[in-house]
Structures are given as structure tokens and as C-alpha cells.
Length: 284
Image (cartoon, rainbow, N blue to C red):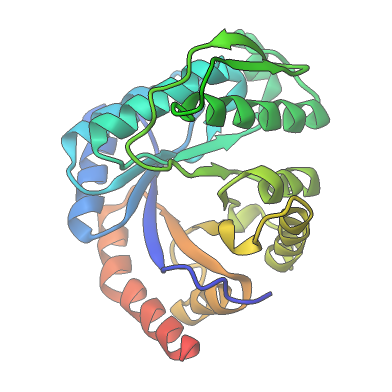
């Protein structure tokens, strides 16, 4: 698949561990000082050893000045209802000066989700519910549209909800997706595809891109509207290999999963300049 031509950006993926509670915040601040574009955190609200991810995102946004913030990705069944999630995201975007992205997943670890009070869904139901949630979220953000928001979905019903507030910028919705139905949803409705390389099957990037691109075209969208992100782990790919993922598979945001400050510093000092150089050369 071709390079989609998006600007090359880099992010960190930090564990929201709550002992000590200041640790993920300090790593986020270090990420900003090192020049990363985003800092992201996983979302497992049923995990008692983690800070609540939305609270952490808000605190990190308040303790930083430039870096973008996002979940990687929000567990939708425990972030309910979508209209309230939309207002939370818009509020954080307004307070942070337009630094919020909305990473969402359909849900996983269903025993834990149900134990925490969430609704257990089948994989097919999870995809359908996420699609409905995206429509509700965008409807709330469309503050300039006359009238209230109404949606009569199977999973989410909204009748006469007030729209707004509008976020400070167009918040991108990134979906964590590894299966074809979720990738199809990315192409139809999302702004970004956010898989994890270590759990991806061989050839997963071109296969996923093909599904997303076909779905985007069928929905009347340009496939280039969908940003391709990728969670990566330290020392598993060379800068040359990462650059090829940009030039051949269109990945433009690489998200490094590590809580080790030395790893973050080494990646910014060595890998990022090398990846940028290879991509710039390949794009000539």
C-alpha cells in the first residue's frame, strides 16, 4: 500500500500505574521535554493497580503545555454514555488548548468489564455499539447544527440531547482495531487506525489498510483521511524497518510503549532522527 503522505509524528505509551501515582505524570512531562508529539495511556478501569485513565489524562494535560494526550484506547463499555464521553473529551480539549485525541476500543476482557458493571457484548455487538457511539459523539460535538441530537440505535438511544460544547479543534477519533469488522468501521467512520504491532499477524498492516481503504471509498471518503498509527515496543524494529512501514504501509504516528526514561531518551536521540532521514529520502 502507498505512503499516505501524512506528517511523521511520534508518541509514548505509558502505563497508568498508581504506585507511585506521580510516575506516569513525570514520564508524560519527560515525553514533552524530549519532543514527542503525544503521550498515551491504556485504559483498564477494572484494574485496581492503575490510575483512572481519564483522570490521568486531565491531570497530565494540566501539568504539560504542548504535548497531545490520548487514551490508547478507552474501554467504551465502561465509558458511558457516549454523549457524556463526548462532552468530557470536548471539555478536556477546550481546557488543554486543543491537545486531545480520542482513542476508543470496542471492549475486551469481558469478565472484568461485567464485574465492574459494564454490559457484556459479543464481538459483533461491540463493533455495532462502537459505530453508534461514534455517531453520538460527533453529533454532540456538532454544536452549530440546529436543534437537539436524536439517535435511535440498538445500543445507544439519545432523544433531545443538547449539542455542545464544540471542542477547541477537530478531535480525531482513533480506533484500536485488529479484526476485519473493526477495520471496516475505521474506514467508514474513524479518523485513525491504532493497532499494536506485537499482536499483529504477519502482513497485518497491508491487509488492514486494504480493508480500511475499501471501506472508506465505499463510504465516499478518501482513504487518506484515515491516519495510520502503530504501537511499537523498544528494540524490536530498526529505524529502517520503521521507515518502510511509513513508505510502504502509510504509518505516520509511531507510539513507543515504555516506562523506562533511558529508553525514551535513546529513542529520541537515535531512532527518531534516523527514521525521519530514511522517510525524507524515500519521499523524494
